[in-house]
Image 1: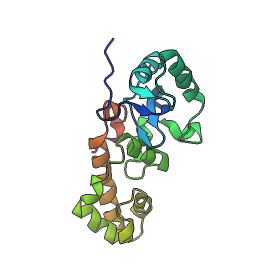
Image 2: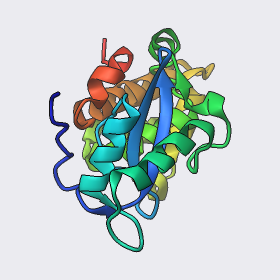
Image 3: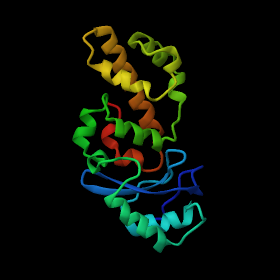
Image 4: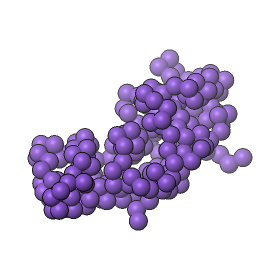
Length: 194
C-alpha cells in the first residue's frame, strides 16, 4: 500500500473530515475550519483517511488514534460543515467541464480552500485590467468574492464586458488548476484548462 504524503505546510492542523463525490466515487479530505483550508490529499478509502488524520491532523484537545478519526470519516458521508446540501458536494466531469468559466459558488469555495486561498492571481496586470472593464470596484479587486461579478458578466450583452469576464475566468481556471495540491488535479481533471 502506497504511503499517502501530506501536503507541505499543512501538517498538524486542527480540523475535521469532509467528503465529496466526484464521478460517483467518494473522496475524503481533512479540513481546517478556522482557516477555511483543505489540509490533506483526497483519499478514497475511509480506513486510510482515518490513519492519515491520526498521523497528520489534530483536534482541539490534541492528537487522536485512527479509531477516533474513523468515526469522523464515517459521519462526513452524511453531513458536512462546509456545505448545506449533499448535491453541493457531488460533482461529475461532464458538468465540471461545461461550467469551467461559470463554476458554482460551492466549487469556487472548495477550490479556494484546496489552494489555501493563494491570492497571487490578483497580481496579474491582465486580470486587473479585465476587472476594470467588467466594472469591479478597485477596492474589491483582491477579494475572491469579486469573481461572482465576473461569472455573472460572462453572459453579458456587452461583448467587451463578456470577453473580459471570460478572460478573467479562463485565467482563474488556469491559476487554480496550476495550484491545486497533491492529487486534487487528478481528481478534478475535468477542470484542466483547454
